[in-house]
Image (cartoon, rainbow, N blue to C red; front, side, top):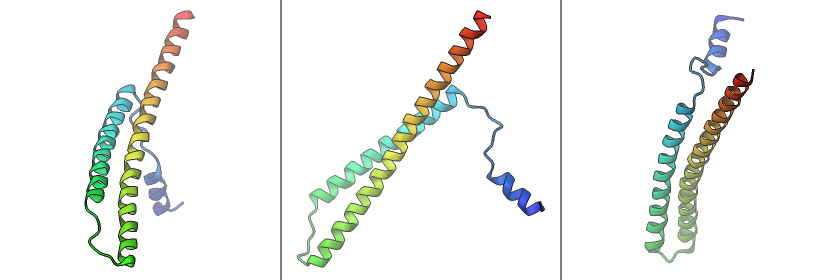
Length: 112
């Protein structure tokens, strides 16, 4: 392998110098949940703004384009909300799994 291939390979590997911990999972889940709640508020505000401001035109083509753009904006905002919410739930699940594994290892070491 050349030096360029080695650099590319090492840049793609995940950093493993910090082990997983319950604290890191919970702090990541809290950050993701804050983002999800913020995006939920933003999505709600955008939807209410679109609902309270009807289109000022009677042109059918302009209305169709406007509806498509509004749907796209709401959809992207909702997608971001969902991604951060699912990430928060996944990190909470990982923290719970780490806690259970540590409890099982603690029980096994006391039985020996």
